Image 1 (cartoon, one colour):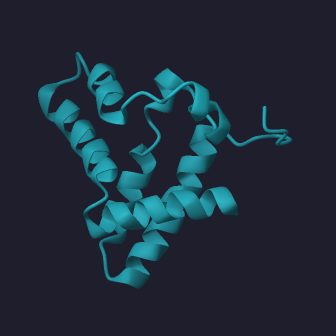
Image 2 (cartoon, rainbow, N blue to C red):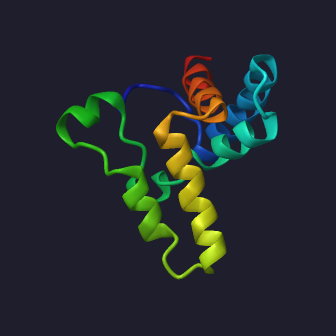
Length: 112
């Protein structure tokens, strides 16, 4: 839609985002493993919603990631579901140093 030839998959994007998040976190004094873990899960909702581009969001607002995640983990063992909900919630809250590093990595990966 945006004219990007050979667009990346969510898996490719998440992998590179996780690598960048671990590097940024190390440089910022945060936990690189936690930042990478958040980055791996940050776009997991797109398995249900697809990747709505910036222009498309103007016309079709995105679903709340926490709500999509709640639906996705329904039926999982409780501790696993809680872990996934917690990761997405932490990433979306933008408060922990690791979440900030993962979000920065997400933007940087898109620019690269």
